[in-house]
Image 1 (cartoon, one colour):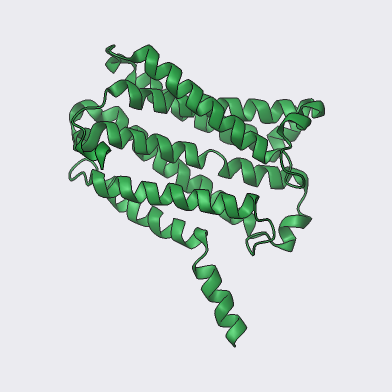
Image 2 (tube, one colour; image 1 turned 45 degrees about the vertical axis):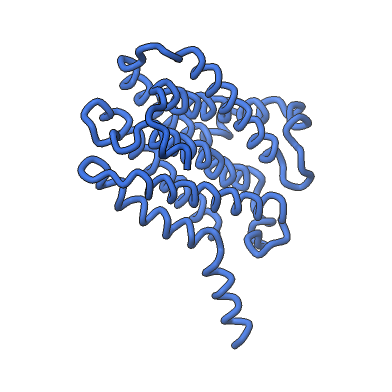
Length: 141
Length: 112
């Protein structure tokens, strides 16, 4: 019983769940970006997301004995391991770009002249989330 | 925090960030393909034993991202870059699509 609870607690605290929650919050604010830009809150959430990704990557790269790396991971073919990593690879760059866009534009992101950057921000958010989902899905096999 | 209180950061920085993200995506899939085609290159990217080329690729991506960010930001500094916005957005979109396609194992194995 104790070990089962501990197992769920550890999984609940794993970076993947935190990343899901932050992405969910960010999705709401991204939809509101045009009408009611909450740029400070979004930037803090993005910083938190970036930090969580760094935590996740450090956990998976430098501490390969952690619970995140399962036996199935070790049994995968080289191509699929590389693909999972490659899917995860661009997300920190995309998030950093989104942070820079918001730091430059602040609440002016809702203005007409920032239309392309708004699209860019939405694209970065959506692509990061899709890539993360892909990586998460592949890690389940 | 200083970045919230600062009144104005030039647009060139955000344009440079978007462009450098797109450039680093291209650099990553090209290098990944080159490593598959020429296995001798693995030596330069295999930084942690047992994890393969991924540590080297991360480091390479970081170097490309920050180098291109600095270079493009300096190039566009104090210039009107408003007419490049749409092109840069489309470049990022195309880069993302190409990255996803070129790293799919089926395509990757066909090309390697």
